[in-house]
Image (cartoon, one colour):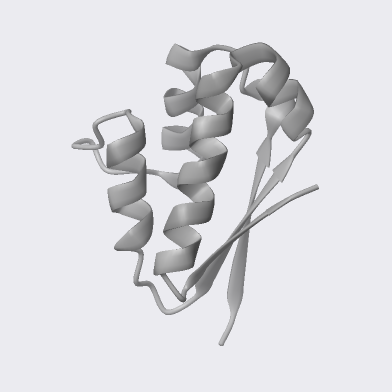
Length: 93
């Protein structure tokens, strides 16, 4: 099975309101995406394309420095979704 690697760059995730727009552009989320952590989780756990999706967050420390607790909550959302969807994985570098 092939794998898609989606690289998220923490240096571009600098404000809470902007982070979801960044994800919309990176993942081409549908227009109904609610731009909150619950909506993010819902889309990720229902991901069911032919290819596996690996989400790689680089510069997570910059993301956390800029966005604080919300960044840590989003990272946990990625981890939780990956734990519930065998076609999804999440790593930080």
